[in-house]
Image 1 (tube, rainbow, N blue to C red):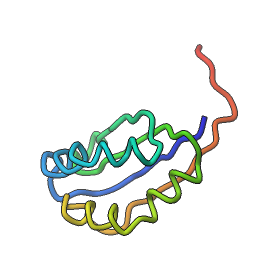
Image 2 (cartoon, rainbow, N blue to C red):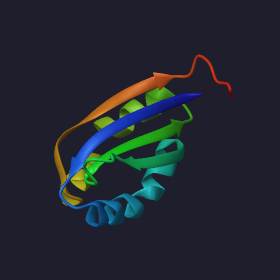
Image 3 (cartoon, one colour):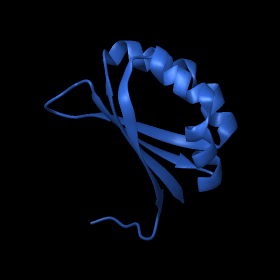
Amino acid sequence: MPYTQTILKVEDYAKWKSGFDGHRAKQKAAGQKTYQIFRTEDDPNKIVILAEWDNLDNAREFFQSQELQEAMQQAGVIGKPDICLLAEVDKGSI
């Protein structure tokens, strides 16, 4: 399965989350299947998102869209997010 890991800093988590939730239909239409949101222990405004996609080309196109850039700016994202496209090579449980 293809995934993306996005690390970003936001002005205010509640404001950002509202914007994220308002963009969900577009995420689904772009091929995003699932997501998990994490906040770092030392900074509640530093967000890590792990998302599963139908394919990495769709993820790449989504992250390069002008619409997403504008939505992130309106939601209070500070600076440029660190986005990593990931291809799963192993999965297991201990």
